[in-house]
Image 1 (spheres, one colour):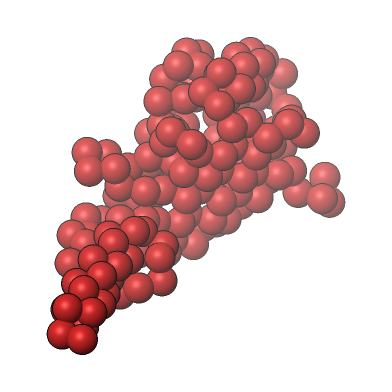
Image 2 (cartoon, rainbow, N blue to C red; image 1 turned 135 degrees about the horizontal axis):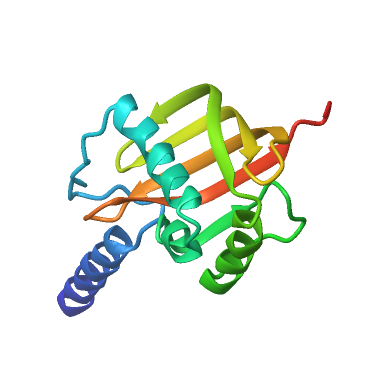
Length: 160
């Protein structure tokens, strides 16, 4: 009987150890995640970084702002962009109009190694001078080296 009890206890320890090491397992972890300190101003600057790369005319510079596995739901395309190639394809087309974004209003929320910047912005197109007002949400994650976009949703305002 003792052997069964010891075996059961050993299995319970192994199972508990595996559960703790699985992200999203629903079990509390005994380790503490180190949170990267970030201010609202630093999160706001992430949009500026993206906007400068957008205005560079180089789609690779824009795509470099996105994490692997990120989702782009762009302003002027009905196609979700999930891969690097799909994002690059979108920005090749979008950058032809020489867009420049300007934040009209925003709310920033900061979590542990995550941040959300959501609000309203206006894109002005250098080729025509036309503009489009849109809603946006950028979610960011700290990858241990830099903040990257994990999801980006932008949609033209319905009243336009």
